[in-house]
Length: 193
Image 1 (cartoon, rainbow, N blue to C red):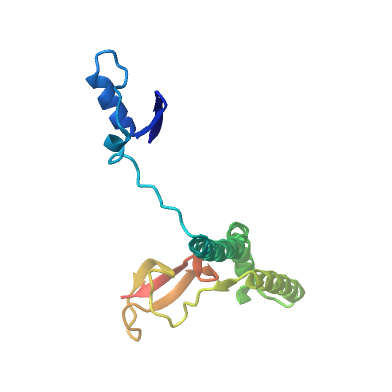
Image 2: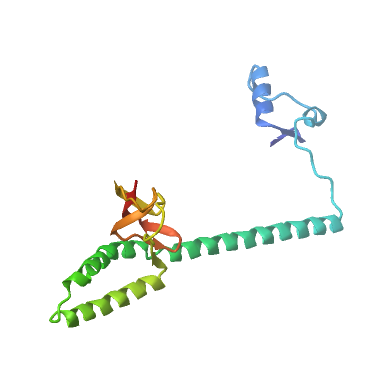
């Protein structure tokens, strides 16, 4: 809405009205218009409110803004919490091959009387490392005796076993891990047919 002052008369008109009226005149100047003619096109004016009404309206606005701000704070805190919850994900994923190497090195077939102290030392280091990762929220995905779940496991092959029902995991090739409730690496498994 634009206010036009012409010969000491103040007229409110929308831009569309101004363009239409300018096109209707030859010289492009606005014709004299009575305020009553433009009243239909102007925005309705709020009548003067009583101070009590204004206070009540402002109080309601304040309550709405306060509620909006509280919701905003809760949302930001939730996002922040989620960010910190999964902030270590990349580092943990990068450490998984090291855990796999420890797993292979700690296989009981490699133990002799001469290597027992080394094996025990590696076992302690592996346990310490796993405990630190566990504190960050990492857990191992269970496979032994479990049925295959495409959300947790990656089937690399199928194997026919007489005593095992179909869809059960019969062997694990690589351990899988979760960070809190998110799978960061699925278990690589063999599934019964």
